[in-house]
Image 1 (spheres, rainbow, N blue to C red):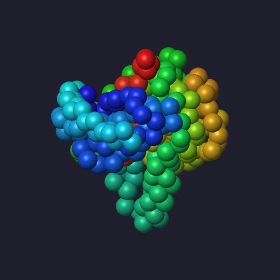
Image 2: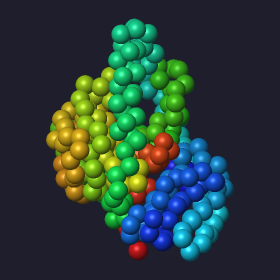
Image 3: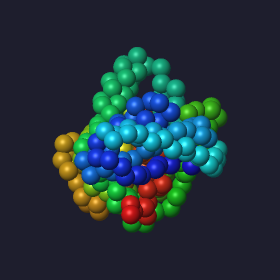
Length: 244
C-alpha cells in the first residue's frame, strides 16, 4: 500500500526500474527492496533488467489510511522560525541530514524484517497523518510516534550501518539514522542519549540510545521514520516481515 515496501529476489546485480526511473540494483545475493511513497500513484510498473533478459511486473497499491493530527502549544520558532541565525542553522542541519538519508550501504539487512525499536510504548501518532501545528496546516507526518518514558532504551530494528548520529538539532534533538541496505534508511528522533556513532555497524536489538523530548516535541516519545531513496515510508510495514 502507499508508504509500504516490496522485497524480491532476482538475478544478482540486476538493474531495477520503477516506472522507467532507475532505482538501483539487486544485491550480490539477488535480493532487493522497493519503497512506495506515502503519495505514490495507485499503479506502477517494476522492471528488472539482467544479462539474460528483462521482465516487468505491474504493482497495484492500496490507498493509505491517514488521519489528521492537531498539535497545539508549540513555540513559534518550532513552527514558523524567522530569526536569520536560526534559519541558517536549520539549513546547515538539513544538508547534514540529507547526506545521512542518501546513504546506500551494500547490505541486505532488511531481509530479516524489523522488530519494534521500543519494547513497550503507546502509539501516539500514526504514519502519514496531515499535521495541524498551532492551527496552521503543515506537511504530513512521515513518522510513527511511540510514547514512552524518558530514558527508555531504543533498539536497532534490524542490522544496519549508522549513517548519521548527532545531538542538539533544532527540530529533532538527538537524531540517529540507520542504513539497512540499498538506501533503506530509518531515523530516530528526539533522543535524550545516543549510544552509537556514524560509521559503526549495529545488529538487530542493539541499544542505539534512549527516548527523550528534545527538539520539536511536547513530551517524551520516539518519532520513528523510514525513507528509501527520498520516498517516505511507513517503518511499521517491515515489522514482523521475513523474506522466504
